[in-house]
Amino acid sequence: MRQATIDRTTSETEIHLTLAVDGHGQAKVSTGLGFLDHMLTLFAHHGLFDLTLEAKGDLQVDAHHTVEDVAICLGQALNQALDDRAGIVRMADCFVPMDEALSFVAVDLSGRPYAVIDVAWHGPALGGMEPDMVQHFLETLAASGRFNLHARVLYGRNDHHQAEALFKALARALDAATRIDPRRQGIPSTKGKLA
Image 1 (cartoon, one colour):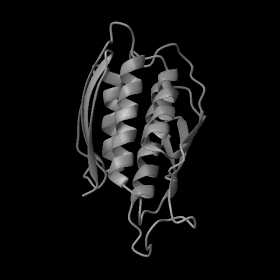
Image 2 (cartoon, rainbow, N blue to C red):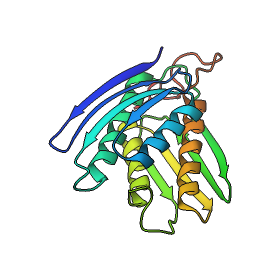
Image 3 (cartoon, rainbow, N blue to C red):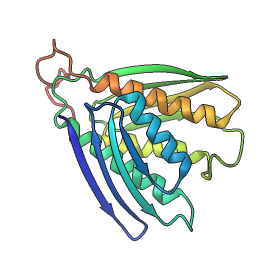
């Protein structure tokens, strides 16, 4: 089973996270941020990842440190669980509608981190977080997980729906990209290495 456990303690946060790539969509998540818990729970559910996460952060300051450090840990866990990435599909994408919103996510588990996030928010807050924390989460996840991520909300009016569609599309794209291709022998790169 491809899985990893990450522990991270700083003066701002304390995080314990376990991710199983080949899971069943089980999630036990507690970050102190209800909206982030909701997004990570549906991420695990729709990606069929098993995720256990306990995060304590300096929420009296704001959500930034908690959101950022959770993304760091989740990315590191994904990177470790995939090891050398031998046999994986590697690239995948997904469109997800959520009522009036439509999002698209494409990933390449290339070992080269890069993120392009395109979304326009309509309000100043999203479940106790600033909406741009969603972009920051995704950018940090891609950097720590060492993968290429393009995420876009094509249209939408409700910020909750836009964010939920993004996390569901990310989950589905990562689920598809992390699958083992039975036809694949070794590393899915003509270079012979994903780094």
